Image (cartoon, rainbow, N blue to C red; front, side, top):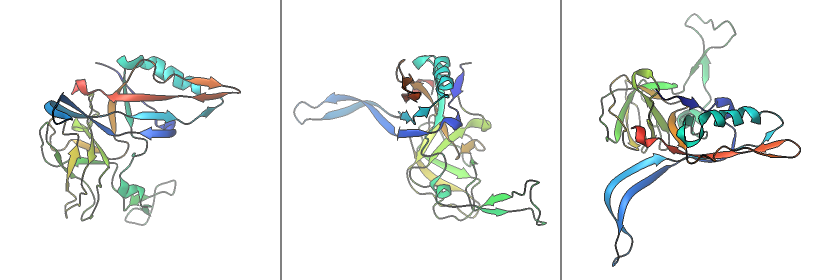
Length: 240
């Protein structure tokens, strides 16, 4: 089984982020009318470009080792969009803290965070590869815009991270019904069949990527002790 290395969350500090879907189609030119005609398969895939915040002093060594271990574009890397690690609904709100029914709390004085979408939900209805809609359950009931355009969702079959790209972007708002379910349109289209009960990750949703070439992630040092680097990725679409 191929090892997939996860980019550490404590390194999610970036100066520039580009994390969007790119379209790829087979085309033929239209010599008389101009432009191109689409005649072959059409695909969408994630192709992030990330510039890491400058590292001052030590700390760059561990990152250099991470990319050395990855082994260039032959390796597999799992990462989230650093700008979309949670749904917009949660990003726009502060949770209210509640305790147990008897008024007590955890031993450290903390309680439950209310009024937020949970970090994970579940697939409420089976869908097939190529479908562009998804029914999500396990959300708070009767919320007008629980999932919003641009939110990211990761599917984990049986709750286990997939070894292939399974990351999707919400296209239209999704209000929840009284049972906490909502239907949303997604892109790209589903990469694999999904079953009721499969996990839907809302907090730190990830996909699986290659480096675009073997030079990515190289660290540049400058005096007195500053380190700069970045890297570009392409989704491991061949694994779907």
